[in-house]
Length: 109
Image (cartoon, rainbow, N blue to C red; front, top):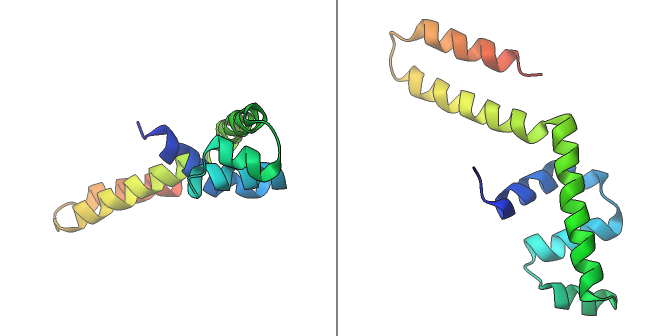
């Protein structure tokens, strides 16, 4: 399982355009620019609790988008498939296995 911060950053990359401007700013400052909750709160002149609540709601929203659209899951499956193809390509006798991996990649919805 990937680290929570890495997962949230990946989900953010996929679903950023679905967030409000405020959600986008909070997530960028917290996860990408490494601002503390207090620094974000001071910048927007809101309470630290308001920032915390907004970030947690946004994380839940990103997880909800993923449960419905599965973009990260499909991305990871494609990446794993391509890595498997690279490994199999080193062995010329693995043509049937290569075809199976290609078929599984083609069937990703």
